[in-house]
Length: 255
Image (tube, rainbow, N blue to C red):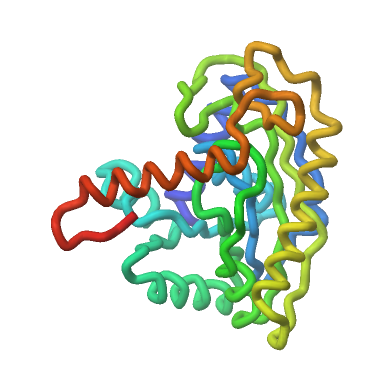
């Protein structure tokens, strides 16, 4: 029993019910009932980890997410993250978080990774980091491609959150596990994972209910929306990094 994690799950389920989220969760048969796996998730909203975690919870698994270390500095979130055994990622000490995730995988845990490393403001898949594939290779576990669509309508970067009752449809899909051999090229394997997730996401987008005209800013331009293009979104992210670096204390180069 994990009282902290179970308590957070209870709160999340209550919130989802209050909001009237219309959750469509598919592919649960792909989630291993035992043993390790790297859950690779696209990232369009701040609540993505709670939505992706449902794919584990529904089959009795608890996902350990890799998340930026700054969350642990919050007096409320920090103890909760520790209590749920999530894994802090420090950009200045990335190897330490990698090794901690690797140990969790070898201990039979499911580790959740956002390979884009940050929320996509274009709501398209950004460039993937290779860490998820390298973890799977070294731990000898599969990659679980998980896609979420609709979460940006609840709360995303640069837009107000919607915590009241809204009845937003939310699609969560778990694809077939992808095996990564130890001899595979990490870059090529990462491209394979991204391609699988892109196809999965496009299928969900095609099946998703009609998008409200008032929320065109939360829809990719490819689908007729007015969100920033992938290139424009990358430029915004770069500007944010430069601003944080300028504001950081002297000697602190974290971006």
